[in-house]
Length: 217
Figure 1 (spheres, rainbow, N blue to C red):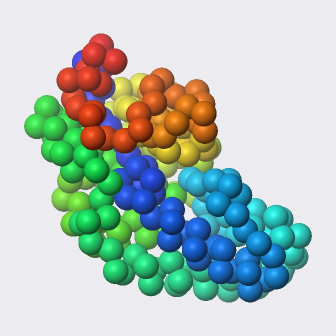
Figure 2 (figure 1 turned 30 degrees about the vertical axis):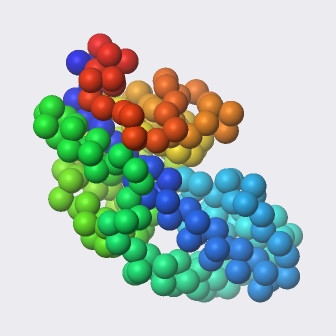
């Protein structure tokens, strides 16, 4: 098989924390005097916290100083963390744990590559930290997706060539980041919402090592 490592995004792939982000951003938008829709929230997927805030403010046509933006970002993150601290294994998306174990039993290295600075906390809450050989998050990279930095860092720490890595992503920016890094990529979601991935899956319920080994011979 031409795949030696699998790299997973976190939000929307391992767990559905996107709903927590949306609630926190929507509450902020309401406080600033404008509405923020679920469709607009799609633009924030896979994007860093500060860039997400900039997009939100652009939607509302609101201007803030750098200090005000820093305080807003901290406020939003604290609201988000209120939800995260209540998470448990029940938040893991269907089929994920089984698939991770299947990869491990077949000798595939596993990494997490996420823009979230809260990734370690989330993995601890859902008790999945031990499933990953490497965790690279927003605390250890400078460039946001679609820059491939987070995924290339995963490959470097795993000591695997980028071309032998398979990325699982639910955001367009993440898919583009994987491709920009010379990696293979599976889109988690509908091809109507995502593009350019090698394959698309609705989730992990029916995915196993045997299937991806046929896709990437």
